[in-house]
Length: 62
Image (cartoon, rainbow, N blue to C red; front, side):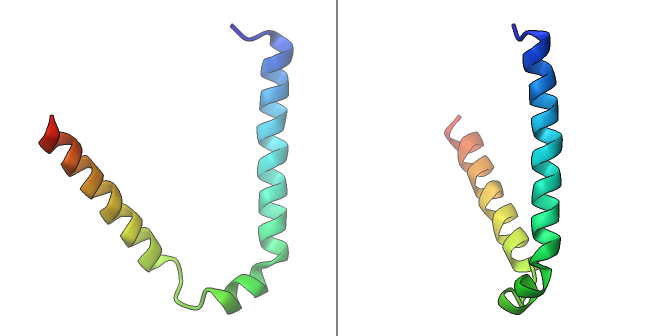
């Protein structure tokens, strides 16, 4: 089991880490737009197809 101090540390870590990631992304948003002109749509679709294939393989082998 985790102690109270460990749970507090984990909660604060998640909050601070998320805030830093959001701040960093907002700071670099112009650069992201110039490098990723196609958007994230094709990447999300590819990821979902990949996960779907893995699920099909899992149920087929089972």
